[in-house]
Length: 66
Image (cartoon, rainbow, N blue to C red):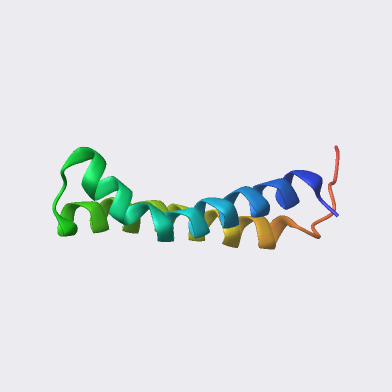
């Protein structure tokens, strides 16, 4: 099992779940409209999805040297 991929998976999942709850705080803290705040969260969620996909792809990949 690839430890770096497992850590990446956990971090990506944590960021993705946290993004679900950040929207109201982002709106009130920075005075953003719903559309702008939603767009920022959408971008973070997309990056989190890519992180999860890459981590799952590499989770059980064996390393080859040489």
